[in-house]
Image 1: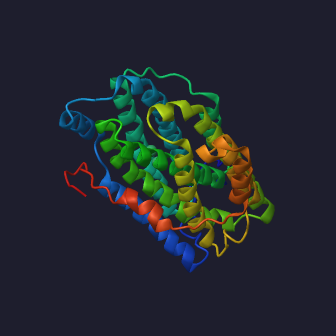
Image 2: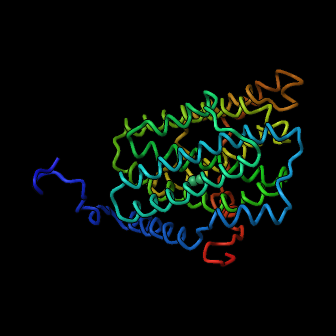
Length: 338
Ligand SMILES: [Fe+2]
Ligand SMILES: [Fe+2]
């Protein structure tokens, strides 16, 4: 604490001096771009939601799907609040100007995601209530840690990629026209937020010691385990909505791997060759918790699939995973279709 302007201060006068090499400078420039792109693409929830409701003549969901839709999107609602809080924490805690700007832009987006989802769910008759244990534990892990690298990995790379996966899969399902079109707006924003994680996490990791990186991987595995449990809890609701949890896991895993690959390759680390055993074990566990029809029919198939899942390397295509979200045209608050 400073006294009368002397001593320690919260103002980081070194915020412009922290670049260690050209690759980091390039990544920070991308973070600054994320902030400005967010300004350009900002949309007005108070305009868009009523516009979509009018366009589709109201919210239309089959009565048997209504409760399931509410339960899945209640998790999204509180996840948006968690993302809002985490991005505000990052906006305060990250030091370099460009990373701070990107996190601040994200907090602005997440506030909009939260109130728009609340307005939408209110129309479905949702009354806010506490989440189930698994999604609560997943969000608490990221909210409660003071470590900014854990927050970036947990929120921007793991939870937001899972959210993108759910948004994309719900949109393709055509379960409810207003929500499906709204997902295009959310996807456009969330893809930028994953971008902040991919661009800035390498800077935080590069300053870690080896054992700290191992602890980060352990944190990642805890997150993945809770995320799997969450999907298990949601399995009956996803089935009612016609969504296959196994498909969501596979799609989500590909996006997470692509984001991690991008972050780690910026450090010159070969993510693929450095086998992440805990993550591979979790991949094998999926074969037991979410078996395919073939595995259900014959348990030996389940063991073979688990064994293969553990050892198989994944093909990674970062652009393929995220371009789809960036390609949506949206109506911005400035009245442009971009
Ligand atoms: Fe969001
Ligand atoms: Fe987000």
